[in-house]
Length: 284
Image (cartoon, rainbow, N blue to C red; front, side, top):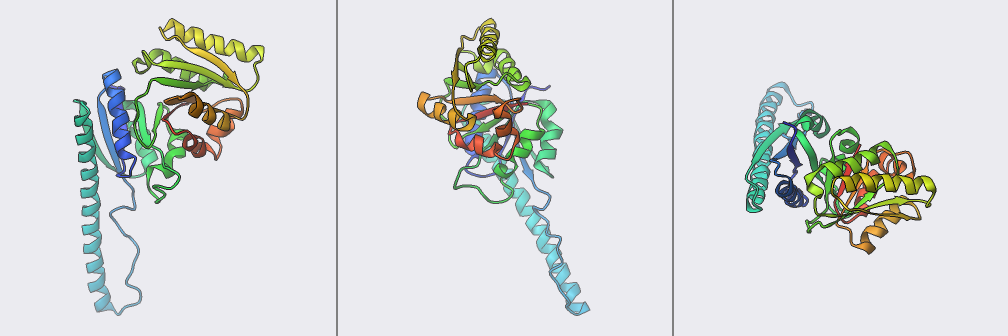
């Protein structure tokens, strides 16, 4: 059943935040949580030949020793992965989540997400901070790849969880922006939250109509949303609005037909997510 909250944990400082956000979503939606840790293909096996041009007898012995070390390393990496999953389970249980499964997978993280996303209502991933987790292989380095590839909502957790009450929906009138409105209207996650639908640009009749259509769709679902048009460049204007107006979460389409498109699809995807100090939910 495509109803799981799939939470990706990698043992980085964001894993606890991912679990806290997963627990929050689970409590509001009643959905089960699956915690997923992916071991990269290069983790646990070193395939390069370190023996050089040693004479045959010594070389054979060294290769056997290296093979034994590779095997031991693979076991340690897998053991660490299981420990990460058990830590995540403990955090979720402490937060009151009762339906929890864990999964350890080998392979490319984006390919793994593509394989399991049909089971998910949302994919949770941590975002990398400005001075943390720059090591290759951490989830932050794969953030844009996952956003581009995933067909389900991608919930990008901030560094630490804080109560979520006020939501900013960045709306540009595009297909994925309308999908974001529809997602909010249909999901029990947003019931009782304060939603503001905001367009960045100028208050043209078309922009105002788009906002009114979005507001009406949300109102039909019982969500009383406020609308606004703010001027400026989307990245800086949205980030400033989040800080100054005290928003707790941003929802936006991952594809659009305006300036927001270049933010989310271009090379600055990660920068856009990083510039907001709150969780960002992306829909394509």
